[in-house]
Length: 307
Image (cartoon, rainbow, N blue to C red; front, top):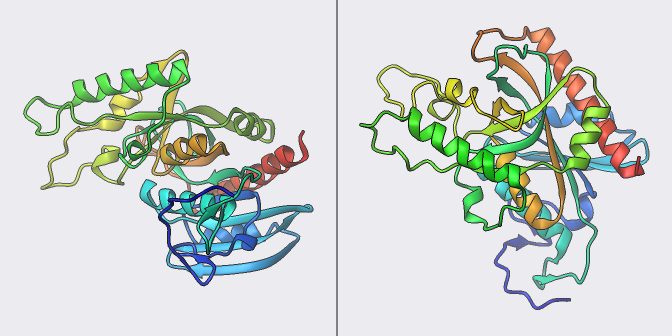
């Protein structure tokens, strides 16, 4: 065991926010935003043996085709992802009561099953978007230092900063102060997700720190720093990589997972197209969510089986 200077809270053997004990998670983790989606994932499990609810965090652990699996709802936003991922790391890497880190621990594999809005006119709602990279418009990830080891990440980061700065009117207080960061999904997860679905698009996911102005939505009476942000981001193309969708979690997920040495990826149905105004009907939405879940489960099983 390693000497610990870690500051985390555990109560009666549980981490504080997730409300989980180490034995209540598997090494194969699915993250969803909506607590109701936990049941949609878990209904595919062959058996379940752990159910924990605490705040917006809802967890079910069981087995899918003999593979241990855990699904957790995180709620919305990179701040919630930060809490969930750090507490999963603590559960996996530490002896809680003594706050001592284990000498070794098998890394986690994490797939986010989310929803998103499309920003490219040629990508129709109903398509499954697989994130190759995430563009973090939030600042949560910037509190965790990590070098860029990927040349494309650096290029995307630089391009996005210039586009956002140029799109901001000169009279705006925060012009030039929004510094996006880029994080990369695990290639193994991207490849597994691609293998298990035909109706998909692979590209950059923009992770916003809010639903309205941070995704370019206008509300009368409230001035946005960057009007029509999504239209400007849709023009970004670096080495053939486009920003294909907006959501609110993947940037910090990938960033932290890379620091931790964990595999992480995201697949999100595009439920609406911001440019064309097209939206899925309720039945189409439910069917697409089901396809997303089934794809994620198959991809995780492929990775688990070493396929």
